[in-house]
Structures are given as structure tokens and as C-alpha cells.
Amino acid sequence: NTNATPETESGTKPAFNTEFADDVKAGFAGSPKTLSSKYFYDGAGSKLFQQIMELPEYYPTRTEFSILKKQKAEIINFFNPSDFFHLVELGSGDGLKTKILLRQLLQAKARFEYIPVDISGDAINQLQSALSSELPDLKTVGFTGDYFKALHWLKRNKPGRKVVLFLGSNIGNFEDNGDLKFLQEIRKYLSPQDKILVGFDLQKDPRVIRQAYDDASGVTAAFNLNLLKRMNRELGANFEPEQFEHFTDYDPIAGVVKSYLVSKRNQTVTFSYLNHTVSFKAWEPIHTENSHKYSVDMIKELGRKSGFETEQLFTDEQHYFADVLFRV
Ligand code: AVJ
Image (tube, rainbow, N blue to C red; front, top):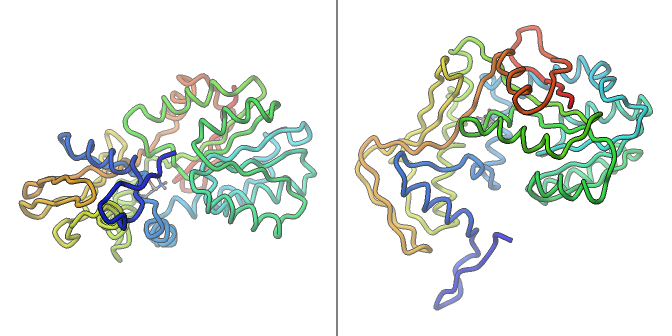
């Protein structure tokens, strides 16, 4: 377990996440300085991400929603719904998009059990209670924890056919080649007859992509800057968020949006809970996120290299987003 309370004279310092502390120290020791995007999602950050999904500039969520809504009947047919299976969702969150497929599966009298997996226990509990009242016929077994711990647990406790969902273009958030390594790892837990549906954000007009990560109302900037506030809250740091700026750009050759927090001046920050200081040069960036954008060829190649065949690609009229079904 990663939660621990540091020993102090008074014993009054709040509990902190040791893994977060270690990652911050390591990420700021290197050059360029980095912070993992997984730390965006504390309470405040999760609320800001909810707001991002409502922004006019942020097209991925509503586009994927529309793909699932329009093509739900066809999509679930590819799951072979009359043959019993476990529907395993990695990173289920609020399950808003998945409910479209769940309703359709129930309507089609599919034989399945839903296994949402999320790192946040709160998210799993909320989803389970929402589903038990909204879809009382659904059998749900939630799993709180790491994706691979969940797959390992499934192997021992829920043998049988699996359809895995990895929606929302979370696949784009890894470091270079991290997407391939992730799918190769998932592949090890799958057998012939198993499938995985993955959400990919597609390459498009670079201005459309850039705007989605630099919205006019500044919500994405606040989401990025929340990392500094989180370090203040949880690690006793004294960042002044006004002294950093949100900067993001899309490289259409690499197909990646990179996001940064840039120090506006020379400054030193103290982490009082860690007995640690970090200095920033004027205009020095902290790299905080990658959001990869894919072409259809890249997707098929990625599938092939990780041991899958692309069975079907579901997309929208504008070809902004694709939910891709890979089979073993
Ligand atoms: C949750 C990883 C899909 O990369 O588009 C949104 C996160 N970052 N705006 C994305 C995010 C900035 C988002 N994902």
C-alpha cells in the first residue's frame, strides 16, 4: 500500500502518498523536469476534468459518446453476446459511456458479467451503487486497484472468455512506446476468443487538436496548474501558481500534444514535508502530459505488434475518434 504518514515531532502533519513524494523528487531531479499525468486526478483535478469534457473545444469525449450511441448494436454483436463472457473495463470512471453498451447488452439478453476496474475506490463504489439502481438486472463485480492486478485476479477467480474495454483515449497518455508495452502486457492475459475495444483519438486538423488542450476559458490551464496546488496540499510545497504558465503544443509529425508548466522566473520551491528544495530557471518547463493522436495505419500496426488483429474500427463522420476492436 502506498499510503503512509511521515513521523513528525508533533504528529499533526497530514497523511501523504509516498509514491507521489518519490515520483515528484525523481521527476524534478532529472532534465527536463517531469511529472506524471496520473497525478492530475485528485479530487479537484477530477472535477476540472469533468469540466474539460464539457468544453466546446474538447471534442474527444462527446465524439466517442456519439460513436457508441450510434453503433452500439453493431459493436455488441462483435462481442458474441450469446456466449458467456466477462466485460472488463479498465479505468471505468463514472461509466457514463459504458452504460450505453451495458443497456444494449441487457436488451439483447447477452450472457455477461461487468467487471469495472479503477484505481479510485470512490469511483468504483459510486459506479456500483448507480448501476444497482439504474440497471438492476446487471451483474457487476467491481475491482479497485491497478489494471494488471485486476487481470491477474481475474485469471485466478474468473476464468472464461473476456472482452476488455479501454475507452476514452487513455491509450494516448503513455510515454513513447508506452502504448505498445501496455497492449503487449494486456495481450499476455488474453486467450483466443478474447477481444479488446480501445478508444483512439485520431490525427486531424492540428489547430482543432491544439485548441482542445488550450481552451479559451482556461479550464485546461487550471487542470494543469492544479498539479502545483496538489503538491502544496499534499507535500507541503510553496509553489505560487501565478509564477508558472500552462503551455501546450501539438506536433503533427510525432502526432502528440505535449503539455508543460513553464516557470516564469528563477525561483526555488521548498517541500516542507520532504525536507527538500527544487530550483527552476526562468522559462524552464516541467513536462506534465503526452496525448498521442493516431492514424488508422498506426493503430493497425500497434495492434499487430502487440499480438492482435484489427477486427473492426468504429468511427464518426468527421473521423475525429475511433473505437477499435482488436481480437487475439
Ligand atoms: C483523459 C487522457 C483522455 O489526453 O485528452 C484532457 C486528459 N488532458 N485535457 C486527454 C486531458 C488535458 C485526456 N485523457
